[in-house]
Length: 354
Image (cartoon, rainbow, N blue to C red):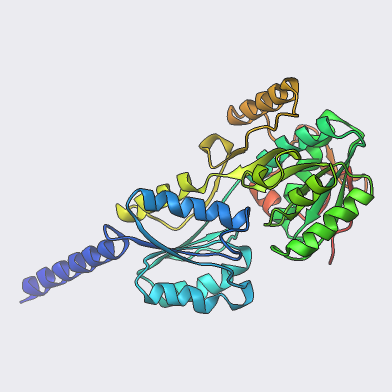
């Protein structure tokens, strides 16, 4: 009798394992939650291009766009209820709602972008966009005649501070006297505020403009006033080709394919992944015709140094905005230190709201 019970237990465990593999395996339906509209031209547009990459592979996908971070739990839960067993939630403020829903749907895999929390069925992911931001900063420093680069700040979280600092370091590597002026709009997607902020930066002397927000309003406004722009998250040249120098872009398709195959093959495990420029998950958009070949060559050389691990963006000596030491000579920031960054580097003009 004891032997029979042992066999029954073994087959029960085997059946549960097989059921779990099927739930996370071969029949994978993928859902996405977006903070902005798919036509924003930036952050959400780039994620949706990644979703379309999966569709071209024959994967069933769906998405919900323009979901406020404060009201996202319902949308995430609805996708899980509809049988989408791999769900990507693509904004920082979705982290806690994603974790809450994940606990209620243990057989669904949840992946949260830009956060840091994990669970048995929830991982998080991001790409090292600060690397591409450094490169576009180099372009800005080389192309600016006034030495003033304007940045529209979205929210004063470590991700955005890190990106603004990388732009500044890149610009000052080319022009040590360059300054980066920051105006906050406290929104991910507000074209009217972004346009007004860009105009204010132009009035303050900025002749190269970029954004940490999601719309193409910055590029459109720069083009309107005859200034240069750097696109954000996707190639924004269609919104003002005469202004668009290049852009720091995401290629989310390569990452989404990676996760999909892990889940499909039953190999997925909860983790925190931060892909770098060597993976192809981030890159630069084509250079505008106005960017001299010498500048293009300089930037591409630095990109290759990043790929070869010969150059690290946040390696000292680096000073903070107030002149104190942020990174000592010969030292490099750890991932944890970069992910918790709460300061501006020397060369940034602007305050960090509390």
